[in-house]
Image 1 (cartoon, rainbow, N blue to C red):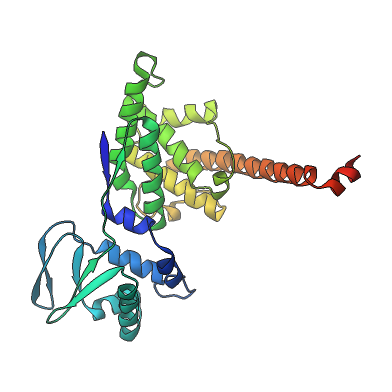
Image 2: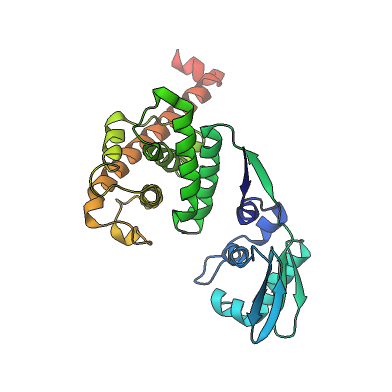
Length: 293
C-alpha cells in the first residue's frame, strides 16, 4: 500500500537552509516570518478554481493562490513595504513565484512536491501519524486531519495481530497512537529510550472507550495535543488550554493523571540520560578514572 502525503506538510517540513536563515523569528507581537510563511502555505489551492479578489476573477491551479499586499499586511500586522520585501526575498531564494494581476498577485509555491510513503506495517503508519501530529501541533490546528490515519493504524494493528489481538475493537488501538504521540512531543525522548505504557494507565485510558459516552478517536488525539501543551508549559491540563472546545470539567481528572504519569516518566528519562552521560564522560577521562580509584 502506498500513501500520499499532503503537499502542504512536505512544504512545512522540508525547509532548506537559506529559507530557515531568512525565517529566523523575531520576538514581537506581529506575525513572525515563519508564521507568515505558514500562512502562505494555508492559502494554497488544492484544485483548479477561480479566486475573486477586489472584483477580479483570477484562475488558480493547484499550488497557487491569489492575494493582495493589503490583505497580507492587515493579517500579519506588517507594513505593506515589509510584506513586499518578504515576498521578494522568498522569490529570490526560489520558494515562490508571483505574477502581477490587475488588482492582486497570483502566487505559486514552487516547492510543491508529491511524496509517496510505502505503508507496509502499523509502525509505518504510526511514523506518519507522528509527522502529521507535529505539523498540526506547531500550527495549533485541530487533530481532525489526523483521524483517518489513526484509524488506518488501528485497522492495520488489529489485522497484524489476528487472533492474538490485544484489544476488543479496532478503535481501542488508538491508545497506542496517543501514547506514541505524547512521547514524541517531549524533546528529551529524541535522545532517550522508549517509554513503555504502564498497565494501570493503559487500563484507565481504555475505560474511556466503554460505557454510554465513549471517547472518540478524535477526542483522544486532542487529548494527546492537550497533554503535550501542558507538559510544555509545565502545568496541569486546564480547559483554557483546550482551544477546540473538546473537553469538559469531568475529563480533567483523567487528563491530570496522564499529565502526572508522563511528567514523571520524562523526568526519569532525563535523569537517566544525565547519569549515563556523566558515567560516559568519567570513563573516557583518564584523570577521572584515577580520581575514582
